Amino acid sequence: MSAVTVRPLLLAGGFSVRFGADKRFVPLPEGDTLLERSVALWRQALGEVFVALRGDDAALAQRVRALGGAPVLCDRSAEGLGATLAQAAALLPPGPVLVGLADMPFIRRDTLRALADELAAGAEVVAPFFGARRGNPVGFAAHCRPLLLGLSGDRGAGALLATLPLRRLAVEDAGVLLDIDRPGDLQAAAD
Image (cartoon, rainbow, N blue to C red; front, side):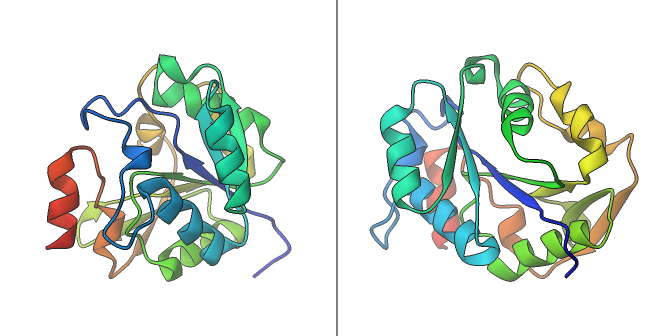
């Protein structure tokens, strides 16, 4: 891997409307919570992780620090995913950004490392593909950062993917598609 430092960013500033409760605190069968699992996974794979939280998540920020993550408080998170991503990206140190979702705790570590390696090797935009389906997380080169800063509202960076050269990374990891949006999604993940 080159000397380029990839900035791992885990988005955890949402309001869990479809889930019906704050899913960041939902216990998993192993005893950890959904957010704890995601932070641990990213830390094990990449050594560091910035975690975008809501602006009023001071107590959760302390927990993220205890887990070895770097909390990024985003007071625009009520505006939606795009606004949270834009604000968090503005607060990160320079470098490429690998953007993931905290409600996707079943991605394999080797997948995260492979995506970061692609960014470090010069990919402009990289995303995992499981079969024909694009998954998450998605990585953006450092020169794409201004585009992330321009995001707003509840739309994430998906629209950018149609305008930028996307490197498709084929993976044998169904976790890149497994997004926990509703309580039933956890049961489906266990099956």
